[in-house]
Length: 452
Image 1: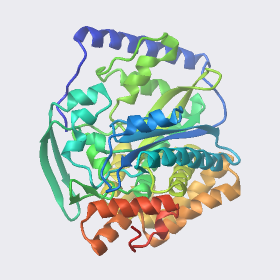
Image 2: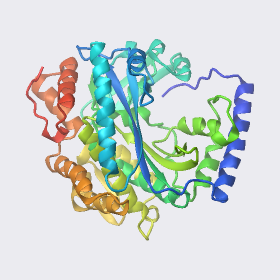
Image 3: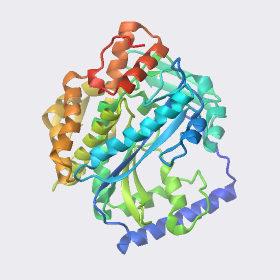
């Protein structure tokens, strides 16, 4: 979508590539001698959110929000009108998912208080319907590479079910409009490949359930249009992996486009920065525990954030559970579905939501909604049980998924229904979405009455 640009010299990039190779060798050697953490699975996540003004338009005051809160749990977002909420790792067993929800609610309460002092609101949504070209200009980018990319020509072509968007823009970074819920699951090195592949396979289901991004630049497009915006149309689907070493060695085949700050090799700074920039939804990451010990974790970026904290944790619980169920099967599911099909499923549900037909292991093709009812939700329960999650905690969160699937109302479906009832007043749509988000009721319960 964007012409390649860089602000680094060829010498900078050559040195960064050398550091990347050295850190990759070091990481692989560390894994081979058992130097990576073997601790029980731990979950964490990052939530990207918008700041909006009273009219529902993006408000470029993320820096002021972060300065007011002054906590490591809230960081600047990719743009001046976004913020990044970081929810730290919890052992997922027992009541870990409930503790993640409490932590999210606590961080959100601080953010809402700070935003209110600025006469703003925080909004968890994949794409803001009121965003326009001016909002995505270089001046609003917080990352230097994005400011450089804003000088390139950007062409967007998205074929929706009802409408089509085909536009050209110069001076904007369109992909910066997309926000994500980044789900992390720390796993032992010997099972990292199985969990990585299973997260790739499971991503389509959670993407459809979390979809809340049907509008971009005034057009009604996919249920999760942010996937279309982030997708690299000419890139082949990322493959499954046989080991963690396979993953990090394969990353070396991609040219280094960024230069990380100088640090000791055992901090893997260049490797982590390069990995972060890879254009894929599923990542295998290197992280560090509170004691400084390195570990591996799976990051899944395919989900949109929100709408409410309850919805967010239900989506996370479903993804963790479904991934764990697949990863612990005696017969690996990646032997029964290939990576290209898994990626095709992701694109199909991003476009068509729960009604999209998908391919699944040994079953015939069927609508995702049917598949979720007959198999996927039960698998998610099984996976959470395998992860040691308390039964009542699993029931509390997955019951929201069951009810959302039963009535078919995701965030995207609600937005479409609201527009059908009240017209294409996107400022009104955003304000009504924000009011319901603040109310906290899960999205499947939202009605179409005006609240503002």
